[in-house]
Image (cartoon, rainbow, N blue to C red; front, side, top):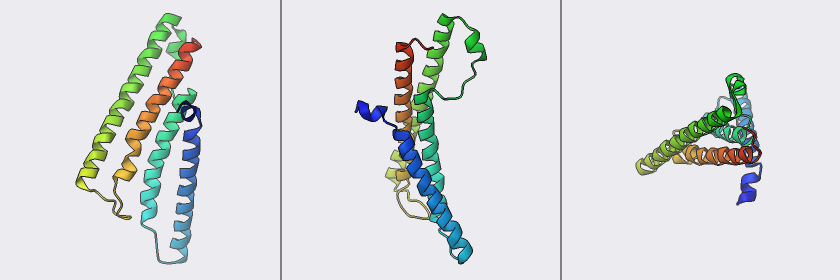
Amino acid sequence: MWSFLNARFEELLGALLLAVMACISFINVIVRYCTNFSFSSSEELTVNFFVWIVLLGTARAFREGGNFSMNLLYDAMPRPVRKLLYVFSILCSIVFFAALCWQGSVEVMDEIELNVVSESLAIPVWLYTIATPLFSALIIVRILQKVWEDFRARNY
């Protein structure tokens, strides 16, 4: 399992989803301009896959330590204060993504219970929204991995 967590899972799945989105959109544009027909499902797929890509990108950013932050005040502080601020920011991030994971799980359970289906493809909507709790949990794992690396290297 540890090798999976060290793998570049986010990049691989994100690239695959982006390629699928590009192909679907390109085919839809060609069909729409060459005929009077349009794929109504193309928008549904691309919008939902875009949400997936954003969450995967967030996980990658936390894994690489490339998430957006304001460092002016942080860098001016002494090391003990920086450590405290680092721990505070990590706790805030974990609480946020844990809440997102929880609420996403509640949404998925509601959609399963109510048998909600998508408008254009008529497939269960939970197949799209399951990405929110799953990828939020992945983001928490990536945050914890980065914290572990940073504390081992005393890089805070």
